[in-house]
Image 1 (cartoon, rainbow, N blue to C red):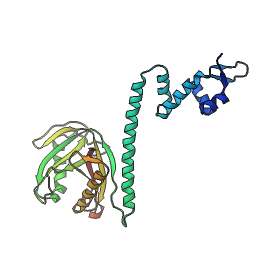
Image 2 (cartoon, helix red, strand yellow; image 1 turned 180 degrees about the horizontal axis):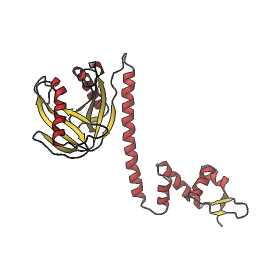
Image 3 (cartoon, helix red, strand yellow; image 1 turned 120 degrees about the horizontal axis):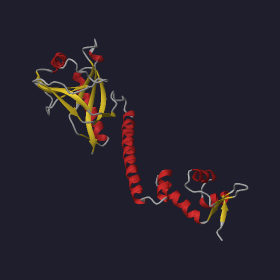
Image 4 (cartoon, rainbow, N blue to C red; image 1 turned 90 degrees about the vertical axis):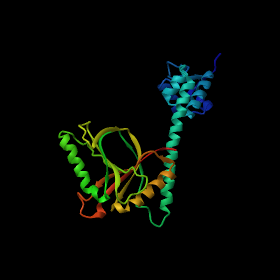
Length: 272
């Protein structure tokens, strides 16, 4: 004759709360072997202890109720567990990144003066851009050069629209810093491909993960921003995988003082 235990007894034997057993009953994971039709008492069998222990071990591995139900119903347990393991590894990697970022902030907090910069990870979606490559005599020339590029594109594409929010940036392909004869590529995100000119090309940029920081002030001081962001990348376990992007948010076109200029540095990165 099979031994039957009331829910309280079964709870003690299985080291599981009565509330949890009732929940497992409601979701169909572990229903009582018998329910007294007169007093609605729940009774569990000795054999169900093995099922309960199985559920507990799967819960300890992080499986959801629906995943456990699949396993108990005969689904491919190894496949489910391997998928869960991969998810847990992804979660662990994210936790490690957050710990590294926290450690970096803690290290900064111990300094007499905190850094004026703060780095964040951003996901830049795939986008269409018009691009122009060229060479400027000096960096100051970009203040007039960029509007000229916009006018050239507009003349060939009067109905072309920039994306909202606006996204444009400058890249510098030279390996070293140049004080003059600066090679550049200017990119502006637009809603669609357009008519190209002798100097303007359209292309689709893939999505990118970037480390982003904001620099306020003169462009001459951007060296400090680059030093900070590359130090942050190295200490947080990332690797640079693309040219830095300089996004000019506020500048001479809308600010009276150079101290109010705002530039965003975006460095494409991947995991080492």
